Every structure is written in structure tokens, then in C-alpha cells.
Image (tube, rainbow, N blue to C red; front, side):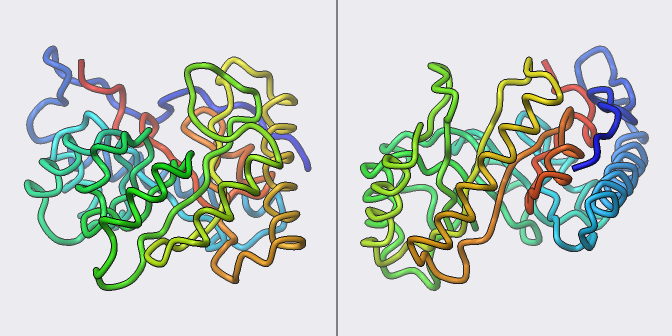
Length: 258
């Protein structure tokens, strides 16, 4: 698909105060402005790819951000937020209250699985049969299934989780389908940010191809259509390559607090 200039990381963000938090009184306005800029860039990327703007959903990555930042984004119309760590997220959920839908976008230890169902709408980082079983056990009996995305690590980076090839993906999907309280909804990837534009696009296209192959060959169900790929520095490329979910933090909230 046609290329686009690579955006600067954190474009549109305003600088914070000396303690890592924006000065009082500026937080809601800056976040609202940044959200509007990100949404515009998403719409333009979708247009370049011949896709409708509503084909892509924004996940605002609020990890390490204070509850006030989430509330400001919520007031600006953002509903879905992504968190990396279960315990940090639970405290933030309690502080923010009702309104957001929460996605878990960081690695989940099985001993933390008991805290996930009922609090998170979606786990984007399902990477093992053991985690699937733990989440399924704790989700059992709750209203509605816990949505999960299967995480890919096609470049086999040691610092990242996820399955590394087609056979492993098939095994993981089969284990999830045996779970009665989980609903597999697609794939998630996190490419190396050091990759060039062409390499990043090739990675996204490979993941899109795997989603299409799963849908064609394995009959995962109609819900299995999500592609979570793309962050602040590459979400436009991801949209042009087929992403349905983009995870954007810095371009909305600015640099993370120290």
C-alpha cells in the first residue's frame, strides 16, 4: 500500500512539569487536542488505504499515566484504554470509576490472571495455553466471555512474549477454543521499533496474512477479525496495512511520567 511520512514520536504532545505531570489546568486541553490530532491522522491513513475511518479503533495507552489523564481523555470522547500491568490498572480503574473499557496490553503472569476477568474487557497478549487455562478458570461463571487476542512474536525477540510461527499459533488457538469462557477475537503484534518503514510494513502485512489464513483454514468464528498493531510511531503504517486496533500512548498523553 502507499507509504506515508513517518510521524515524529509524541507529535502534538505538550511538555509536562518538572515532576513528569503536566502543569495544573493544562492536562485536559492538551489531551483533548492530542486526541483530535491522532484521530485525524487515523482517518487520513484509513482514507489512503481505501478503508472507512470506523474500521479502526483507538486504544489509548494510559500505562503509567495518572487517573486524571484517563479522565481527561474520557471527557474528550475516548472510551478504550490500554494498561500493561494488572495491579497498576486495578488501582487506576478504581480511581477513574465507570466509563472506560480496559484492554490489557502487557504480558500477564498466570498468578495475576485471577484479577483480570470482570475488570478487563479484552486481553491482547494471550501467549500460552497455561495462561489461557488460568484466565478461563477465573472467567468461568461471569457474564459474557473474556475477549482475547493471540500475541505473535514472529521475529522471536527474547524480550517479547508471543508465539513465533504458524504451527504454534494453531496450537494456541485450539487451546483457547477449548476454553468455555474465552472468546478469541484476533491477533496482536509488537514489531521492533528499530525496523525501517519497509520492514515494519512487511511485518504488519505478514500478521494480516496470518489472520486471513486463520479465518480461511481454521474457522475461528466471526469474532476473529481484529488486528492490533501499531503504536505512536507507526500507527499510520499499521492502518494502511490492515490494523483494526491501534495502541497509541505518547502521541496522546505525552512522554510517560518518570
